[in-house]
Amino acid sequence: MKKEEDRISGWQIFYDDLSLLFLLGMVIPAVIYLLWGVMEYANAPTAVIAP
Image (cartoon, rainbow, N blue to C red):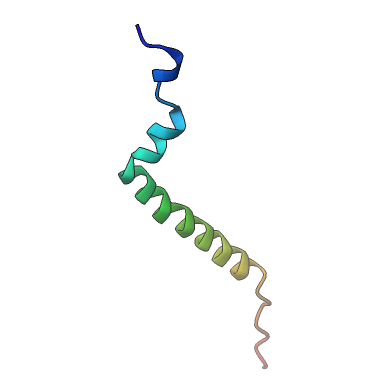
């Protein structure tokens, strides 16, 4: 039977998974940059075309 001290923390399992950390490191900035671009596009003034 394992002691309480021998149990592996959930955070240690999370940080030991390098592929998950790499994926999160690529996805999170991409999503933030995409949302930032959408917000900039939505707040852009409309162009006035002279007749």
